[in-house]
Length: 445
Image 1: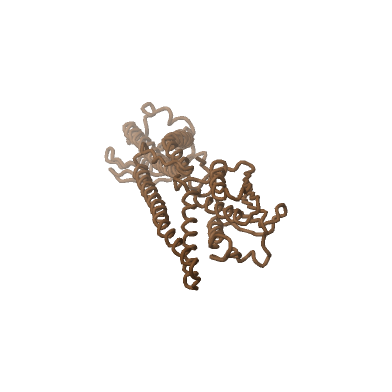
Image 2: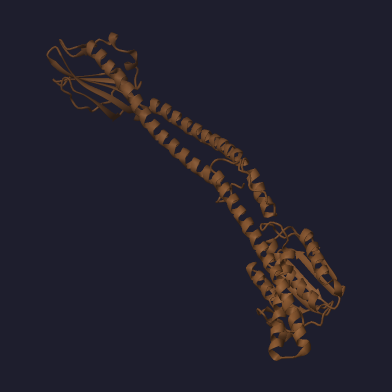
């Protein structure tokens, strides 16, 4: 099964799974990035809040605002370390960490008990997360701001997100490969069904195997039911046709004998016309019996095989015209694969060859050539036809020689079969045999 086929179920499943997983991975990436950012900033804020309380314990308000540096983490003493604090009293006094050096942070004052998380630009282009809290110590209001650079955390977070995206893409590809293998293994269970359908098109009358996945079982059962109905109807139709033809043969033979006896004694116009109509009915019945013999008892679903069916057709024609010692030959080159519906092609070839046998002096040749199209050529060594008579052959019931057995329906039926297969038919004189040459090209098999 080709995945390039837009109607392929495997391709549709892969596209659906790809879009679903891509959407899922995208949502996970967005949700994970947001959650990770919030988680890290909450963690940093919690740590800054603890540092603010530690700094508050190290603050002395008398005689002046000061900080006991021994109680402060050493990271706040290293210039531009990424960790900073700022203390502002309500009197306007300020204390900053040595790490800020001479950089000034502009922050609002907070009332005791108030706190706020802010984002500010720090030294060297650092992105600072600032935790701002208001305190009251020894009758003096203080605003303590503790800040940390987010750039290192952001870089690590971006690295994690890109690794996650890469892992998601690899995982997506692995899942698609696994899904493709699973789908192919699942469809492998349908191979017996495909083989049954191929055999069915070749004429095998066995029902489809019902050992298929549950999703396909109703369809298989319905196809088997339809095949059974078609086979029964086809058999009933053939039996009814044969029974009717055989049932009419007896009374028609009696009527034919009766009119033969009448014509020996008198030659009335009405008797003569009645005898002719009885004879026409007899010939029609013979034609239908001949068709029944050509059709045989094979499946209605079988394709025509030149290698198998053409010799059988020639044997039937040789028996029908055995009194004339006709040389009936058929050539298929190269060897053609089965094509078309067996009944349709037998109808077409049977009528063409039967018509050629009626007019032939001694030779009938049929050639079947398989190329881009299927070409059938039937030739005989009869008297042939004039150009003015060729087109009238396709008219239903048209006959150019009333003395020859038949009713002009054969070539009209041939024309209908050719139209069914989107082909074309041409009549001309055979350059080799001198009689009629009929060339049929079937474009849609």
